[in-house]
Length: 218
Ligand SMILES: C[S@@+](CC[C@H](N)C(=O)[O-])C[C@H]1O[C@@H](n2cnc3c(N)ncnc32)[C@H](O)[C@@H]1O
Image 1 (cartoon, rainbow, N blue to C red):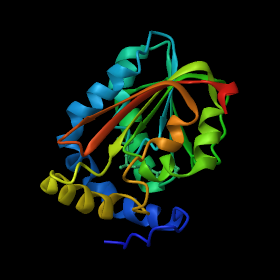
Image 2 (cartoon, rainbow, N blue to C red):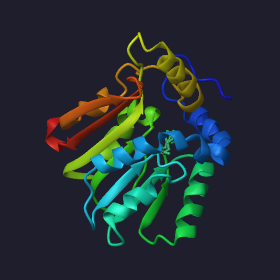
Image 3 (cartoon, rainbow, N blue to C red):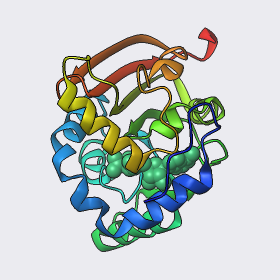
Image 4 (tube, rainbow, N blue to C red):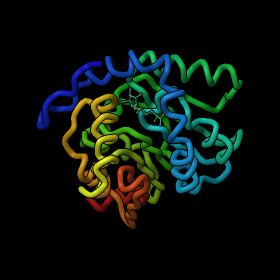
């Protein structure tokens, strides 16, 4: 397993890509336990038929089915993913399901370019992206004013939840390129949004944030 670099270093793109290159073949099975959280996160987006939604750090596209069931065939899903091996699995999923309204962008979140402004954005287990301000700025620049934003991920649980924190440590070492920011992983995103609400689940080890894009607020 690639080592996570010490706190304070910039998010390592090469470290993150190596992590997910290795994980891609068994990623979907590993994430099964989080499917109820994913379903909740997608519901929080409040998507309507015909809307466009960004799936930031979309991985193998595990959220596409749930997103598509809400935006419908006239809506649009844009998946942004920097790891070619993860994106290849997303492409295979889209092709197998004959989804004509899922666009895939192979790029870092800080550099991704695509047409139009979206109605909503999902950050599902994307700690590295949430801790990288240029990534947040670029994603939010592709959202309509008032767009709904939902983020989900690992965070340190309260100290009494030692077992949950053991899980967070193990999962983070395996899935993020930097361990800092796990106290409030969502704070850089929250600072850019309005009407932010944050809830926790999994003994406090998983956060769910929702808020509205407010272009003039920062
Ligand atoms: C834990 S996976 C989550 C995948 C998906 N959102 C899900 O819920 O199954 C994190 C994903 O974010 C991608 N990623 C990490 N940093 C990124 C960045 N800066 N830009 C784009 N994708 C990134 C990784 O390659 C990986 O596929």
